Image 1 (cartoon, rainbow, N blue to C red):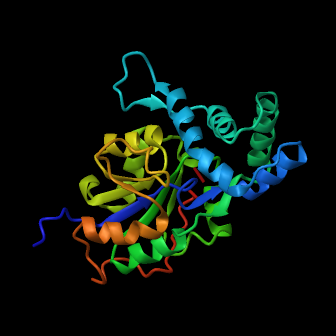
Image 2 (cartoon, helix red, strand yellow):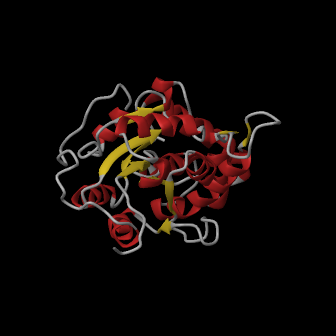
Length: 261
């Protein structure tokens, strides 16, 4: 025995993890309104959006425990990203509203995350089961399907469809019940500390943060720089079943009514 903790399943966040912001469209939109930028500048600035989002979250009620919080303000997330990218103050508010309108109409977290397809295949090759828990508007499964991120996923728990949002541990409990796995033998992979890390921790799950900048995770907390490295990190960190035949085949996807963020 290696002494590493055993793992049976990996549950993924959707937006910011399996699918990402359409930085390409965002850059084109900003340029059309007078501010020239590029995809890499926006990608690098996005971590400041995460920090602003985390700062905007608050306790669900004054007597609530620390993990019981209302998720943050997406406007704060976009403002933080745009300000870090150098967008002039006078242009930020209008840009935020355009981004929100795009999200409502077509979705903005809709591009395949770099390395995510490889991460899913790598996790399944280790014999681990895979599912998704997403704060979304009922379209999580559609966006994931359009990005080719449903292959190997057993089901999607969409907050809009189950009536519970991260960081409430109850939404994680829905996924754990469907998987039939113990929380401490199930890993959650996400990109937001206030939503994904806090919620998964409250549910008793293992957690790893997607942290490309290397300075967003709390000191000593598990992190991976990108989805390309996820499967190798999982294999090095946990005892995994590999190809035990216990998990459904990598092409299996069970429609759950759920279905990114």
